[in-house]
Length: 627
Image (cartoon, rainbow, N blue to C red; front, side, top):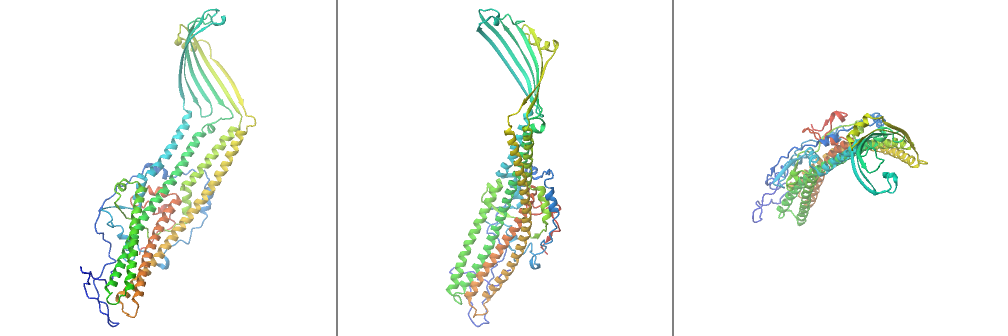
């Protein structure tokens, strides 16, 4: 609406353009002047260029993290059964207080919602943004997100390293020895004089492997030649070869795949732990990005509301100044000037808040288009929801049990502790190893190693041996202590899981209730706007018309300034309640563990953070508050 009376523009010499109204009888009315469109839509002094940002692409790693892995081994079944026994909440809010609804578009009372989507003229360039674009951009470009996504890849290498312990190893070794030393007996060369001269070459090529069942297998081919001046070496020179096969298998301690692959199991569990922790960190970052967006929305709303409050105050001050020769006293002018100065200061602070919110969004998203132009203006295109979406705590809790990453982290810790107990039980057993070895050997003259290699398969028979090795530390205290420690760690992991589950259910309960409470608060704040607006309109007309001369003008000014401030406070409180309602849905999605999955959704017409996935979580029809 526009005010009925306003002050005409002043002339260059400061004189009024029209004569002030004369003071007469009670029936005399002020001379009407040209109206000032205080409630007209905001139009920036300069229309900035609007830059459409590119559509971000969410990394594939985010999709894999957002997909829950449902292998809870029945640990959640008792809690799921307990949740399903909860009766559907019949106290869901279905309408605003007193039957009043909150319009999604209101030119009078929610005048700022459409205007704030337009640039305010604070920069020559403007970029339209919404929650979906900012969250996806953060997932694509934020350095924090990129650093978090590297951690599962780092931990995945530990699985490969642990599994590589069972890879076969091939080795090759060769050595040549030329010996020349004095002889001190007749057993070396057969003579008691001269020196012992010997040339020996030996080479080994083989393969060994740690088997997953605990055994060790080695196959080695040895070969070489020898020539010396001893009478005891026959033939001289000669070539020798030997093919060996050695195998050892634990029968008690260190026996079985479960024991020997424990490092792989623990490394895989660590990867799952890291994925859960990274997912929690990503959702926390998305909440920060969303909060920063709504901070920007709040700051811009406050700037527009303060601008309108300032224009109202300026108009009132102009009227007071125009009446200074008629019925205005000095105190009225000073009071209006004080209010004017105070409200200008508030406007400067609101403008600074806009810059702060934009800087925080640039930091959180890591977007190049935002960081390369720090003076660009971000124009929010998404407003808080004005609809009530009833959801039962039971439905939200069931979804949380299936999706919360901290529950998966707690369950993986139970798995880790359980696996360690199994290994610790095995380590208490005594060591009993089966030892097997066998070989074939060949011999040939004239340093003919190849001939000896052939002879090892044709001459003679294989040599073999078998044996056992038993070992047990006296008292075996270390192994028993490790088993006791691992059992206590398992008990601790179970209690941590119980606590984590109860915390999840409490978070969902609180978050669900907060959405209802925030909506009720938003509805109440809207009624406050209606009441404050009626009071301002009434006092504005009373002061401008002043049909009762006996009424104190200073009291009217005081009341009008206070009413304007109350209207501003009501509008600001309503925006705060709007943002609280929007953030309550973000927190609800986080409490259910679906925030990351929603944010990575590539469907453009789906709000990735606020709106609710109806097939998954709604317990009733959507109640729109628009009529």
